[in-house]
Image 1 (tube, protein in one colour):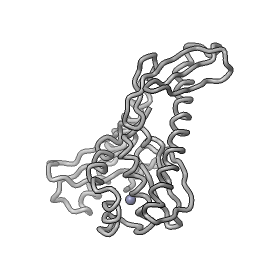
Image 2 (cartoon, protein in one colour; image 1 turned 120 degrees about the horizontal axis):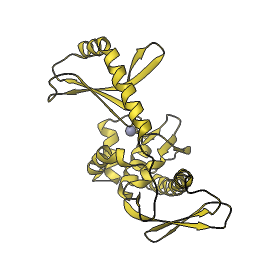
Image 3 (cartoon, protein in one colour; image 1 turned 90 degrees about the vertical axis):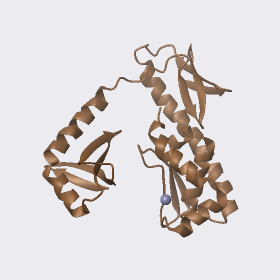
Length: 240
Ligand SMILES: [Zn+2]
């Protein structure tokens, strides 16, 4: 990730060289900026050009942030669909006299009961919070089980596992053997979760993305390439 500074504001961006690009363009998606430049350009020239156009890039950035803020909040109405381990769950919303909001999964249904004292206007906000907590609980349990299962299979040991909340980073493994996994991946098909788990565990052997590293991943997941590109392609859709 590179940085662009204007006064006190810092924008982090990804620099991408593309042989299809005729000129420099900037794109923002979910708070991430990607600047694409033509393949033939040297890195030095590209960065110099970006620096010279930074006022314009900051304008784009501010516009994108404003648009993000205005995005209408999801309603979470009865019958809406939610992804969980690659399956579609159907939301069912009921009111109950209980004090706390409750979420229960029954087959393909996710049943949410909201305390009657919560006003209808507050519903989406309350449901969003409860759903996120539910997803995180499921993610913690499932990731933990898979980490242990694959660690035993691969003959590696990790030190600590933490659930993370990031927009576009799916997992990481530190030199100390601590593994972080993003809860949003629990929305992806189970084989993609397996891929992420095996990927991070393989870093316990190689703390890089060398061919030796990929060989370890391939040993346990022969189809890892497809799973990896799935995550690249659909990662942005993994959210509530
Ligand atoms: Zn990695």
